[in-house]
Image (spheres, rainbow, N blue to C red):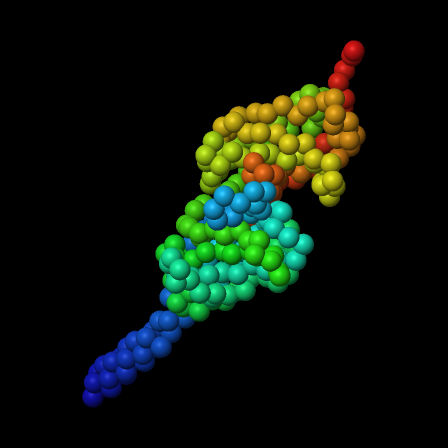
Length: 252
């Protein structure tokens, strides 16, 4: 009799666990879903002179979209929207920001339908100037986050200009996208050195003559950017190397 009771309790317990697992299957699956890295290059449709440009980088975890956006020359007051669908049958699924400064970040919980569209390449980012037809667009596709690593100089080093910057880029093709590296004193973007990158990994020369503003004791920022000098907006595309001593050219 005692054995029978124990078995019945075991069966009841198993059923309870199974029911609980089924009840939590949706949230558990959502919580454990792997993140999808996303990217979109934004430009004008057709041959538009002096068209704006932009970059959208995001990560989709289940239905939560964490995004970063940078744009240039679209307008003074712009709105960014996420559209889903194909061809002319696209619809607005979410507003990302309104107004959007030149560099923005945010987070949105999407509907299940929109999340599926984003994850499967059926979504677009649309950045448009308010009160104008001026706009840039780009299809959202699965792609690794663009990442820059500065191999040298290391923190605390001394650089004599002209000096070499050793780097490694991951998640994006340097040659295909014509990437540049912007260098400036951390927190002071008004004066920037633009260095064109020629390969995924290598070194570029930090020049001397016109960049005396770099001389001194600084933290330097190294930022990936497009050929149109739009800084890639995701955190992995920027590195700050701290406590550098930068000297001008020695001798005549």
